[in-house]
Image: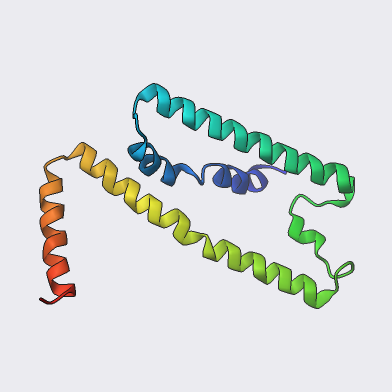
Length: 138
């Protein structure tokens, strides 16, 4: 228990934030009220889903379930090699999810920058045009 146990959950809970700005930018009609209600509904739905999944796991296994479910894979129930394979697969899933966080974060940072400095859009467009000339010779 403590901060180190709760920190991964807090980080996971805020994992959707890089995707919020691009989604809100594409909404039609776009208004503060519509955006706020959409984000509120999605967060409540995710919270209910996480609660139900956690409750189902607790009711199924009670005190036999560790706070870190990977600790339950000790090799007794599934076998040593299967447990190691599942842990390795979990690691691959975590590594594979990095682009789904970083790419929307990059897009959100660019959108925020263009919102705060509108004159930069001209320079970014010119830079992109020049870069495309180097990539696609005519």
